[in-house]
Length: 209
Image (cartoon, rainbow, N blue to C red; front, side, top):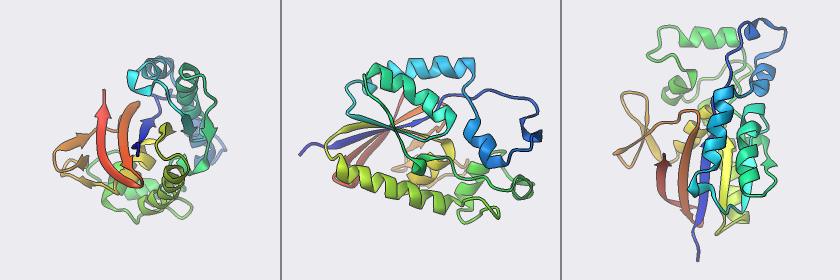
């Protein structure tokens, strides 16, 4: 029986846009529309040429613009059409004022890092780390059943990936994810993680340079 390989990808870097938070759009609309920077486009192209991402059977992506912009290069290199699933979306930020209050005097400047420590925190219209992990789990449970023995790429977002990896990782004093007590993961933009499953059991997790 062949193992199932899932390449879990965080999208490439996004562009900085002055004033975007001053529009009339809510935080969810803003989040969904963020695009890759020119450097991010180049990162995504380079990532798609990684030997690990050759000969894929299927590709899944979040429906957010920056994830699709990363997925398109991997899909093109494999002559595949990528599939969208909202379960792979970034966790919902919700009310930004409430999020700002939560981040006051926090150790890091990254809300997703802080939600690794407080997994039940959510804004009034946002998602907690635990809620995000649960929806990611449902997605991965399904593709592990439907595509057993296949090689897949899944393009998602920093917070959602971190929260999903809590199934197997601990959080160290620097608020980094640690696999098997010695592998510290860097969920940067972009990043490439290789998850190897035997049926629905993870048997190895590694970060690919």
